[in-house]
Image 1 (cartoon, rainbow, N blue to C red):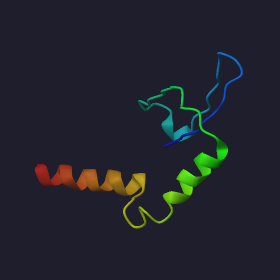
Image 2: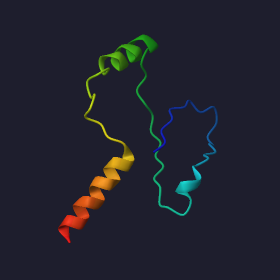
Image 3: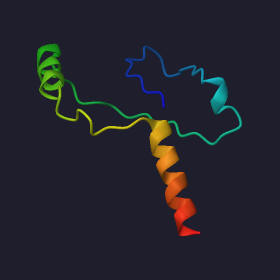
Length: 74
């Protein structure tokens, strides 16, 4: 998964995708983010530190778990 927050300076953006995405269906979305001061954004990031430790998994682990679930349904 790719995610990048930018501030565009024109109405056109060029996007390079990883080679492994070629030939696959992908989703591209764009929406404005609410304005925040840098200090407020930094504080909110620090408040997340350790909150989800051990609770998040990688994309590969998620896909593997879904494949296991699907095989059990068959």
